[in-house]
Length: 293
Image (cartoon, rainbow, N blue to C red; front, side):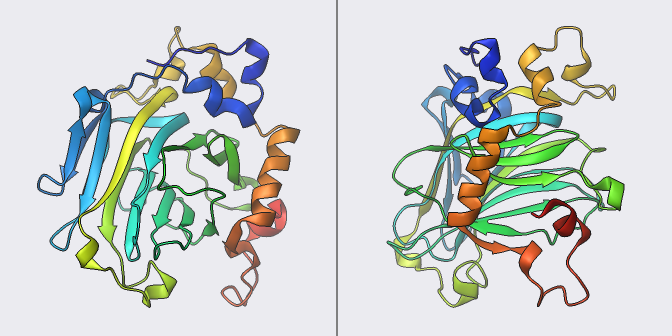
């Protein structure tokens, strides 16, 4: 379990959450996850402190969490596939069960050596997505581990990179936009070949002479997420629910967080469905006008 090292007023600085909450994290992948496919290409190492996924021409690999969650904050440190990763996709996401599922996505689209990764994000509700935003990163995500976080509560979904918000998706049910709120979601991650679309629309294919491709994971932290129980309640409704988690369930971005979000979207966003008038000739989705996403 991670130790909360921050004074109470720090909790309210949502833009600094990663630095506060990941401190002294001692997650164990044996305890929290199971490798679900890949025929040995997914491995838990270092007594449960490290997980790696590999991809070769025969197969990729993937894992999923043992718990399901309904609201809260989830952090994972990931080091992406280095070198010529063109054609590969490392996906890290939350998803519910069923044909009318909810989903919150990070997908990291590989590229030729020296060219930037694209972070592809999407939000699904009731089985419908089409809410893509894409970003470059302001660092090399293959050189070291970086923290990728999902905050999900009744007000909004915020995606963070190293504590900096890159995307906010607000609850716009009041204007008829479905929002993920009814179904618990499990954490998934996979590394797979998508060279039919991932890099430059499929123009650049996977170079299998570079295989195996490997992504690494460490320091998973869901101490501030609500574990879904079979009884239909969550750990956040119990009497011992921690105060930090309670704050996150109602927290919105403060002025600093909004400024950092705008900085990322001004300087690093490379695609926004909310400005794609060619894709939506009959008019942009309603949340785009309401929220100026």
